[in-house]
Structures are given as structure tokens and as C-alpha cells.
Image (cartoon, rainbow, N blue to C red; front, side, top):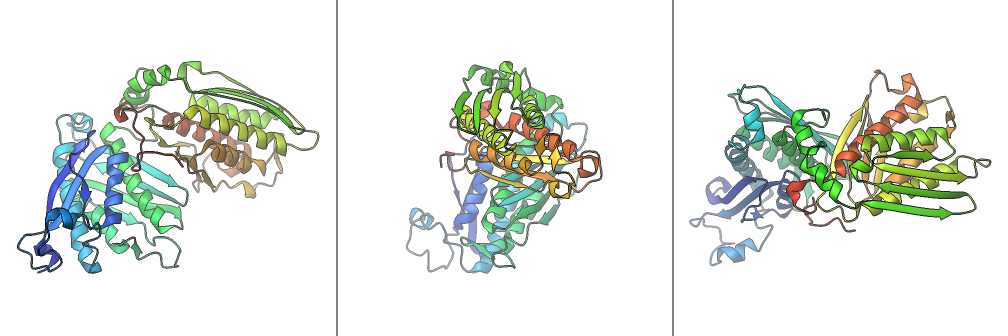
Length: 453
């Protein structure tokens, strides 16, 4: 009996902003893990169970009850070719459920705002320490045709050079089948592009997380490039429940340290109304960088440093960045209930941030193209080091991505403006990462349930 004839999908759910009473058990363990990202990052209660029909002649299931069969999380991984139909069918059914119960629901903000037939767009990049994937989604209420998929994720990593053919027991060549089937049956146009990354596992995970976050943004009427939209303001603005809950939380950090090289005092408060910036490091360009970050993040940051500038700017720049990262991590605490991920742009620099507790900075800022050794009084070589020190001590994953552009803000308009664009984008992303998401009710935005290392 063919796979098409023998498998049966049951307990299929897509519930917006709620959890399903069922679980995810497709018979391919890694595929289950990827689908679970929709629960954590799209905040959609996804469930599906795959079993062979009772009239199947499969010897592997004969004489076994369903619970025993379900204990084998990779029961349908072999033969490898059979995964194609299974994955395609799961994508189709979840897409249908999503369209009927979420997208076209009368309670959907997206549905209410698009009765005039206008297109809605959203996108998101998910930053992992070894991968960055971007997802764009377009929804057109008037579209009668099936949704379309644009897909550029392969190869899955660089080890081996051709990429991984299998992650866990999941055949990577069939990942496209899930997204293609979901796009067709949901009516969404979906685009997935791997921007960077050499780790196949993380490329795949980044794709499912980016897809999930883009879905959430679509349903919320948000887009990362437009924080002035009414729906964005309602969710994250100063009149929002998120803002009020942030006001009620005590999230502060303070550090004082003295060495033979520097004497530093840093105070930080994430409460929006405490917004105040006083930066005095003795390096004017460094003051500008931290002022831009704090102003865009709308946090209170006070820094005072006396350093051995008669030696060089290295010790001061490094130690201040380390101290700021440490107090930020202290103020964030467990990060439970927070939005956790966001991306933001300033001119042609995009910062993608995740308060992951997996510290890693990846940056392609074209600083090496500069003919200058210094930006005002800060050594150019210290810029990456400053961002890296904040990221590592702040326990976050950050990708700084300079798009190839001749527009203002690129290296052609000056390395100072490029660096300040990166600082502003960093602050904008941080503001939405640290925002409280009331819908999470204090739960951590993670399929693991925790961000503890």
C-alpha cells in the first residue's frame, strides 16, 4: 500500500493565540520540532497526528495499539522517499486549517482590516548564531488563486559542501514541500531566503522561526519596517497594554568597577517613563553610539567612565561596552513574557536581534573599506569590538546586515553615518525585543520553555 493510501491525519488544529489540547506527532521527529516553532513564535496552537489507516497492511504496526505506535517519534522516517507525501499532506492540512480558523476568522484583525481587498504584507528574519533566514508573506483577500512559494534555502549548510541531505531523520529536500503546500492551501504568497549561514540545522530552524514570526506579524497587522502603523502602535505604543506592563515591572541594572585602565559606572532602567540618557566616556564618538542606542530603545542609560585614554581608546571602549552588556542582561532577568525577537532598519543597515542567551554577533558592516583609522576620536577597528562586547555580555544573538546600496548611509556617505545607522537600528530592535507581550502571560517565547543556558 502506498503512503498516499495508508496514512491518516487526525487532531489537526490551528488556533490563534491559544494552545491546542492535542500535540504534534507526524512520525518524523525533527519535523515535529520545526512545526512546534509555530506554537512558540507564531503563537498559533498547532497540532497534527499522523498514523497509518487501520486497514493498512504494514507489518510494523500490526498488533500494536496507537499509543505504542506514537511512542516511536521517527516511525515514518523510512523509507526516505515516503516523507515527500507525508510532509506535503501536513502542509496542506495545516494551511487549510490556518485559512479557515485563523486567517478568515471574524475575530482576526487582519480579516477585519482587509475587507476592502487591499494586500497585507509582513516579513521577519530569525537570527540564529549560525544562520539568518528571511521570510516575506503577502496576503491578498481578493486573490482567487492558490498561494505561491518562492524558496531559496538550499544548500542546508556547508558540511559537506553540497549541504546536509538529512537533519535528524528529516530529508531536507522535502522541506520545500511543506511550505509549498501551506502556501497553496492557505492562499498566502510566501518567500523564504537564506541570507547567511553554514549550519544546516540552524538554517532550517531559522526558516521555520522566521516563517512563524512573519505569520504573527501578518495577523497583528504589523511589519518590522513600519512602526508608525496604527496596529503596531496599538500593540506596542505608549497607550498599549505592553507599555503599561513594562511600566509596572522593575527592570534595572547597575555596575561600578575600577581597574588600572578604567573606572566605570553604569546605570540602566528599562522602564519606558524613566527614559534619560547621560553618556560620558571621554570618547565623543562612543558617547554618540550609546546615546543613539538608548534613545531608539527608549531606555534610561547613564554611563560615566574615566579611562587611560593617554594609552589608547581600546580599554575605555571595550570596558564600557562590556559593562553596558552586563547591566542589560541583569535588567532583563529571565526574559520570560518578552517579545524576545525583532528586526529594525536605519537607512541601509538592518539589525536582527534575539534575546536568546546564546551570544553571537555576525556583521558585514563595510568598515574595512574605510580609508580612515578613526571616526572622530574612536578607532574604526573598535566599532565591531564594541558591538560584540555588548552582545556577548548581554547574552543575545545579533546579525548586523548592511545591504548593498548606494543610498545615503552606506560607506560612500561616510563611515560615521554608517556606524550611527547601525546604532540606531540596534536601538530600534532592542526596544521591541524587550517589550512585554501580554499575550504570552509571562511564558518564555521558546519551544524549550526556557532560555536558560
